[in-house]
Structures are given as structure tokens and as C-alpha cells.
Image (cartoon, rainbow, N blue to C red):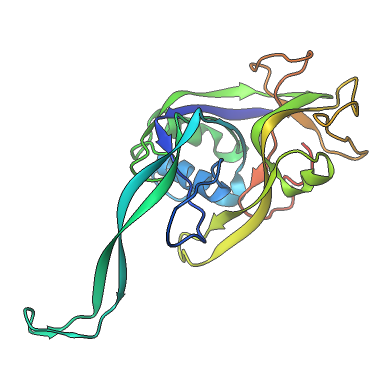
Length: 258
């Protein structure tokens, strides 16, 4: 299977939990799918049909830190201002907050989009807008952007990746999170949410000694094909596998192990 493989690195990244509005701003330890969609559209310079794309990634960072920053909190005023000679409609107050950052992030992004893979390949080689990961000030850079051939295999390993929630029956490792899956560009208040698993361990799928430890996934009859990247390091004669995600539901969605 041909996919676009993009390698990205940066200095900082922060993916704010959207439900934390005051106080310290924690970050997801991996980019939400909605962030990945925005990143792809930024490279293309236009909104891409989300139904044409599925993706997977490997995401790493070297540590965490807190950045002390100021934000303006606006509120309805309605009071008469003598200096302005009119009634203020809003007032803004400067509020200091601590924002959690991920330091020196690195991401390998795999994009499966047969109908537009040539356009995406050209876009990532010549991105329309500045390359960022997360916030607009989190500048990043692409190391490579190449079309490669994934290999279907009976076994592989997952590590430092985002797993679909359906993988919970395959492994007890990883942390359950609720992330924005897709934000409607025409109405940003319309957000679809989905449960995922952030996996920072290495787990093996389809290994010869399957079931002999917590770092082995349970394999079920009827699991979909497993696609591995032949360019990744070999561990126990296995290559890194890709867990696929979609932004919107489609007939051949990426549910289950693939």
C-alpha cells in the first residue's frame, strides 16, 4: 500500500485540553486528530475533503516544561466610560497562566489518501503556510516527505502512537483520553469527539510468544490487515505497525486493528 510518510521535528508543542479554561493549561501528550487535519490543510493551503484521508503517526518528545504566559479574558462590560464618552461593550483583563509544553517533539505521520496522494506529496514538499504543530508559535520543520510502500505482515509492534478506542480489548496498556476528532471548518462550534488510547509503550502484535506478557496485544480472529513500515528498526524480527484513524465516518473506516 502506498502512503505519504512525513517526518517532522520542532522545539515545542502544546495541545491544550479544551475543557480547561482557567488556571494551568495542561497538554495532551499526543496531537488530537483534529490537529492533524488542520496541519494537513495548512500544508495544502485549503480545506481538504476529510473523507478522503486516513492517517496514523508515531509521536515522541524529550520532556515537558511549563511556560508562563499572559492571556486576555474578555467579559461583557455595559458600564459607561467617561474617557471614551460611551458605554463599553466588553472589557479584557490580563491573566497570567502556566501552559504545559512538550519539548523537542518529533512526529512521523503516515497519510493514506490514494485519490489525492500526489497533491499531498507536493504540498508537504512545498507547504503553503508556515509549518507549525499545535499553536501558531510552535514552529516546526519537515525533514522528509516521501511516498513509500507499506508492507502487509502477520506481526508488528506499536509504540508512541495513538490507538483507536477499539484497541482497548487488545491491550491494557496506554491511557484513555477524549480528543476532538474533527472540527467543522464552516462552524467551529461543531466538534466531534472520540475516545482514544495514547500509547507510550512498545507492544507486540502477532508475535510468536504472543500472550506471554502485558506488552503483547491479544489477536482476534477477523482482525483486519496489519500494515508495517519496512524502513523502521527491526525488533524481534518485526517492524513498526501503523494504527489508522479517520476524521469522519466512512464505509471503509479504520476501526479495529489494521
